[in-house]
Image (cartoon, rainbow, N blue to C red; front, side, top):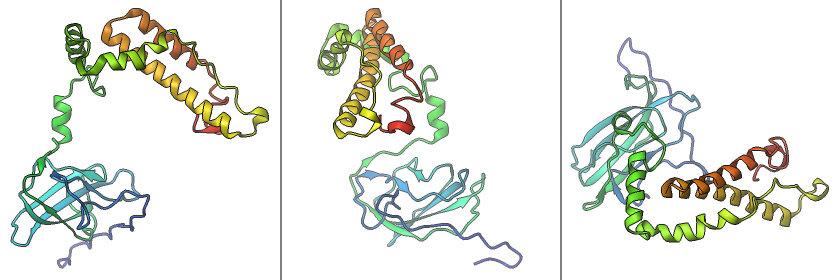
Length: 250
């Protein structure tokens, strides 16, 4: 519905979700295990689109919330929701959160009491609190230092001893896996594909696990061995047997 003189909202591209697509969630079929639930929807074609999400209470629930602009087609609110019944919908919006399309169809969900409360801080707050030394890593430099100290006191801390014995130490003495030779006469053979796939995975394991082990234990020999594995793989032909054109899964 529009007022006289106003511009009608553009129709929202809201395709039906297939079995292999991201689903519109939550809805009446969803099993919600956290509060607030995670909201997902199929994106529109425009890659730079932003969205607003509107949550309204149902059945005597007076909650009314709107969030946006949201740069991706999924969202977790910053606050838990009171237990009760809800409806939600989304639209494409501008940089100020003003709707630019019609709102989607409304989908219902229920938040039951006593769910674990797992609100997600906004992007702005998360970035402000991020350790920028290594923002993409699980352990920051200070946490690595503490982890290393904890290991000196207890080698079984976080079951490190098991990880080290089974996933780090074996790669120290194992011969570096060479570049795959490919298929006989370049004709695909299942057994060759399978073994080469395993070899390529193990190359990644060796580099990653030796690097983690060397950093945590401050073992220079281990770090050097990780570099040897890495430099060996860096010498593989980018247009060779492990190229996307030859076998993308390798």
